[in-house]
Structure formats: structure tokens, C-alpha cells
Length: 164
Length: 284
Ligand SMILES: Cc1cc2nc3c(=O)[nH]c(=O)nc-3n(C[C@H](O)[C@H](O)[C@H](O)COP(=O)(O)OP(=O)(O)OC[C@H]3O[C@@H](n4cnc5c(N)ncnc54)[C@H](O)[C@@H]3O)c2cc1C
Ligand code: FES
Ligand code: FES
Image (cartoon, rainbow over all chains, first blue to last red; front, side, top):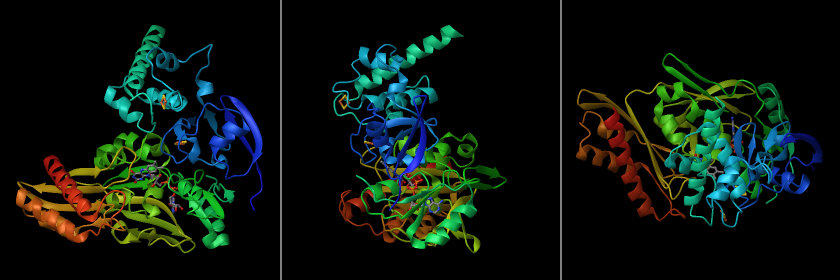
């Protein structure tokens, strides 16, 4: 019934143009169409946050957005946050503080955490737990995730102060 | 989880929205944040042939506080409410309630309009709006209409809004007195087992007026006039709170589901309302 439409989405700074049906969920566009497989599918029902990406400055569950809604938008995934040769302070902190075990939730966790620290650069433990409540981890028990985010926040503050 | 196919529209103004609604009737539906609608479409419990995305429609995202009136555009998100300092100062109960809805990601997308128009008894804002005595602003082919939040809800997913009408804003008098939004949920991101919104105005040592509404305890939100009346003229002591709880229990009609049996829900409703009244009174 509905025909493929032409969409343009900027993902990690690169403009992507393609044809897709409007009902395609953004997580499938990213993973299967654009081969950007950092964002994961945990629940597919808007609960776990494994699929979290940043869209126009908001943390969004990409399993709960149609590709049509994202047309013309700017999307950032974990791939756009840092890579093996240029780890983001959050990625580094998760590595140093054992903020992951199986790693399945990690791309969503870190993507959400980048936005969270932007809004609240010096959070308390309670604020971290509340601000990260949309992301579920089945392995770590969260303690080391909280530690990692605290460490990254401290590191990023120090870098900011040094720059001032 | 692939929803059925649909035609997608992203009009820039209300005239565009209304003309698509008029052309396709029942087969067309507006979408705000999509965080209630998309899950239903994925489960194929909602079938939408023509989906009208409201994200680019002008004039629906403003928060306006002038004199004694607060007006919130339908596309204002829960995150916007939490983030808006003037609104939090004018009506702190809105922020307190919004912080208890869903999780951070959902709150960036979920809108006031979607939350109140949806008609799901689990949504938190309908009861909140009834407590605040809010007015819903609708626009349709016959122009603008207003409906009181207290008259809007008919049954689960049935409201006074016609299919060809769009909710553009909610407005309310700036609330006076002490407030509380109390919610019992199984975990963060869950809908309420029971929630209570309370506003209490104090005059000297007695309660001058009280407004109480309950969430997810009937197939609609429940504005309990009797519970409020039980507090008026009292010093909101234990006996008065007990009377208010008893009055509220007479107004709700919970059903058994995965949040528990009826007796449990009534018990939780009583506990939650008691807490809400005590907190609102302490702030009055
Ligand atoms: C994991 C999760 C947890 C949640 N937890 C809670 C919770 O605890 N409490 C709670 O209250 N909500 C909760 N929600 C729902 C969330 O707040 C929704 O986003 C909100 O209820 C609907 O807003 P929306 O903008 O997403 O609406 P949409 O999903 O876009 O629309 C919902 C319905 O309203 C209609 N509609 C939308 N806007 C308008 C308008 N302007 N005029 C007329 N009709 C309109 C649509 O046609 C649709 O039928 C949760 C959602 C998720 C995914
Ligand atoms: S896969 Fe999107 S929230 Fe779980
Ligand atoms: S590290 Fe395994 S789910 Fe979080």
C-alpha cells in the first residue's frame, strides 16, 4: 500500500540518502540499511534503552521511531561518539571501571550518558541512577556503570577546567 | 515487530492537519511523540492508514504563563515541563508529576497532548489535569472548542474529542496552596498501580479547598469531589484524612490485572492518597 519514500538523515556527521517505507523503525534503518550496528535491539518494546541514539539533542529509543519521523534529522550513535583510536572519556571510563560485562547494553548506556552529562556535568549518584533509568543492564548490577559515569564526569570536568 | 504499512504526512500547519483528517476520516490519525501510538501499531493493536506527524506544526510547543493562567501547547514534552523554570515555579505539581512518568528517553518524546488525548487510564496527566481543573483546547472543522478535563474522559480510550478534532493546548488557573503527586509503581518506567494528585489551600489552620484526582484505578481518571469535600473545614487531621480516603474509595472502580487484585489496588490507593494529602498539606 505505502510506497518507498526518499529520506535524508545525517548519521554521525555523514549525510545518508535512501529509499524506505515510512513504517521502517529507525533502529532497522541504522543496523540493516546503513550497517551502523552499534545501537542494539534488546527488547524492541521501548523498555531497555539498548537502541538509544541521540537525535537533535534528545536521547531517543530508535526502536520507537519511524524512519519517516527522523527524515531531515541529525542522528548520533555510539560510532559517532568515539572509536578504538579515540575513545570518548565515557568509553574509557567504562573500560577502566568495568562498566560492562557482556557489553550488550553498553552502546545505549554510553550514548545516553553523553547526553545526560551534557545536561548535568557534575551529577550525584542519585542523579546518575535517575538520569540513566531508561537503560537496563542484565549483567553489572549498575554499580560499576555509576562508577564509570562518575569517573568520566570528573575527567571531563578536569579537561574543561584545564581548557579555561 | 513490524507495523502495518501507512501513508505518512508531516504538515507544517493546522490547516494541513485538518484537511488530511477530513479527507481520510477514521482511517487517519495524528501522532505526537508516538510513544503510546507506535507501540500499539507495532503490536498491530492500532491500525492507522494515514499517519499525520504533528512535529512540524507551528504554534503547538509554547508554554505561556500570563497573569493567573497557564497555557501549555499540546506538543510540549514531559522533558520540556521538567526543564521549564517559570512553569515549575508557577505550578510545581506539573514538574513533580512529569518526573514520575516513564523514563528519560520517553520523556523527551512524550507530549502533554498525547498523554491527555490518548485516553489510556494508565496515563498520569489526565488525573493531574483534573486535579488542576484544566481546560482542553480542541480545534476541528467547526472551529475551536474547549472541554473541561473533568468532563473529557468517557471510558478507556473514549474521550469527548471527535475523530476530526486535534487537541492544541491545555490551560489552567495557576494553582494555589500546597501540592503533591504521589505514584506507586513497580519500577521506574512503569504505569501507576495507583497515583494521586492533590492540591490543598489552607486558611489559618483549616483547609479552605482541596482538589483530588486518582489515576489507573478506573477506566478513566477519577476526580473525587467527595474526597476533597471531606477535607474542607477540617485541620486535615487523621480523622479527616481517613474520611477523604473512604470517600475516594467510593469513587474508584479498579479491576484486577498484572498490577494486582482489586483489594490490593484499593489498599494502595488509600496509602498513596494519604501520603499525597499529608505532603500537600505540609506545603500549603
Ligand atoms: C516505556 C514507556 C513507559 C511509559 N510510562 C508512562 C507513565 O508512567 N505514565 C504516563 O502517563 N505515560 C507513560 N508512557 C506514555 C508516554 O508518556 C507517552 O508518550 C504519552 O502517553 C503519549 O504521548 P505521545 O506524545 O507519545 O503521544 P502519541 O503516542 O503520539 O499519541 C497517543 C494518542 O493520542 C493521540 N494524540 C496525540 N497528540 C494528539 C493531539 N494533539 N490531538 C489529538 N490527539 C492526539 C494519538 O492519535 C494517539 O491516539 C510510557 C511510554 C513508554 C514507551
Ligand atoms: S530495543 Fe529499543 S528500548 Fe529496547
Ligand atoms: S553489560 Fe550485559 S547487559 Fe549490561
